[in-house]
Image 1 (cartoon, rainbow, N blue to C red):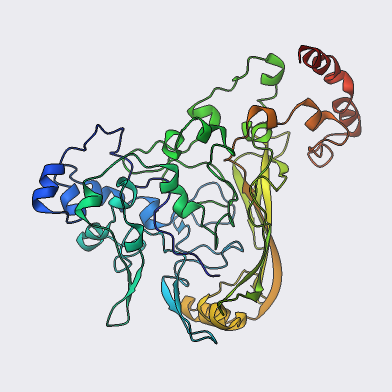
Image 2 (cartoon, rainbow, N blue to C red; image 1 turned 60 degrees about the vertical axis):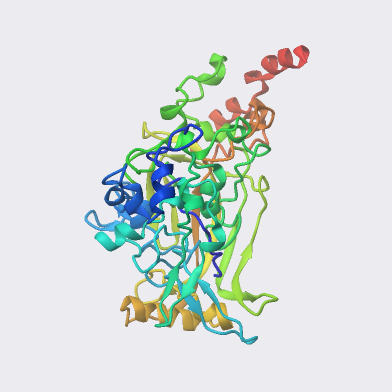
Length: 455
């Protein structure tokens, strides 16, 4: 996969000390006089923040996980070491590197951790004074960051680092992280723009963006820790969680009691995020050659608001098997609600000896399309000696938690309760008698008739 070299660490990883600044952030005169020397300068006023930051998921790319089947309680999981078929690799095997020359003689830099807010010399999970000094504070905190400086650089010894904008201009123009700040990394995750998530934080696509809200209005940062939701595929977290009802709204947010009666079993997202986008399938066993001579995994893509979700009961715990990663829950467990999910299917190589998904080093297939060479390189890096690669598919349920639609586009009574509604009541565990009742117009006819007359 040719992962675009993104330039920001998503969702305002260093937003803890940024509020709504006055016209000028304190310290400007100090920087104009002494220059900007990275975190050392920031810590003149914000001591201890660099050490605080390298303990967060934005730096470590992994954490302990307590809601996923089959994980070891004392180990950490995340972009650093996980493997699933949206990415089919991780920081260990696909660290930032130079891709071998293709048949046109071209090379490029690629790597799953190209968004990491360090310099790559001090990399994912590193600690100590050198790591603290390598943090790119301005990546999220500057409103005049020169992203052209945030690019891979090959040193004389052959090692690769990421450049940073540590200019006085960037350091003296600080401000609150914007949606662009976060989306620069998040939008390009999974191998390209709108591949993984498929949502756009724009006024036309999301009601929060239309109100000029930004990511950190909901993902309220505390000591550089970023609250996250419970997406079944997104495991690493800082121990802080965010939800619609728990953060900004209540369990009874509507003026209409009939609608509020749904909230005990229906998640907010189900009605308010009726569409999503992004890739629906990838094939890592067969890569497609591009005009520039490089290869990318064969991918079925969808635009924003083009994909209809699948609906399932979810109690915020995750089934994790080689062939499936997704929500656990049922209508009878007392904890689950019906949530919307984007269904993604990925084809990759599995180890016939134990059934586990094999990782792939993207350097070889990116240059020449040789996918088995990529598997061989990855297994060598990971120390896997006993393996036999066989192709297979994995299904993943991605949570639909962003891109809240305007009111006119949310699900209505008939969206679910009409016989051809979006909810598969049978699959959700309802009996034939219950389904007959749930799809009877008696439930909604008079209500919608009155609304129709109001129009």
